[in-house]
Image 1: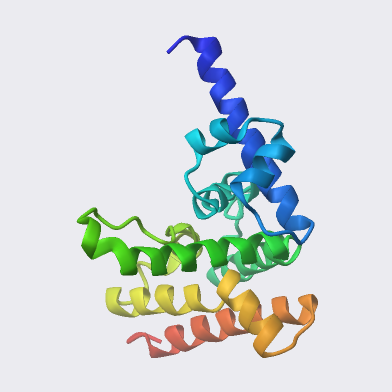
Image 2: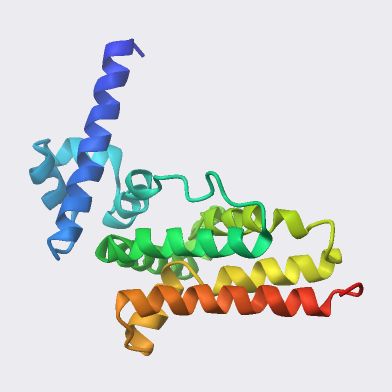
Length: 204
């Protein structure tokens, strides 16, 4: 493909994604037709890039993954984890509608695949990526040599449960917390899990 054509396709794709993000932030339901109109591209063109609103919503993550929440973390494990959880919470609570839309898209993909997956015979597409798990592993990396492997893995999985968008929804909706307290509860939970793991280590 000529370089100019390739760049144009990337610009069109990004315009559709940016349009979807803008619609979400306005509290509107994202459709391919509305995204196409907002991006000033034809509906036929939009469908060549995205076959469904869910697919388009998944791509919005490309615009909201920055800044790098694992950059320049402190050396101390507890401080590293607290910094990570704080950064993620502030990022997501500051753009709550977009992150909730991503959850909705992933749930809709899960239901679609489990309804039609066996009929189509096609391999399932992961409904969620493992970005958050990777962030947790980075934060807890200094403990890899001091905690037994099974305990380190258990801590990693447990911490991944108490921050991120699902924790945002739980703290905001089920607990009724304001954004600041929601963030602090996530930090406290992550820190408590780390302390428990350290106490359980054989040489503690």
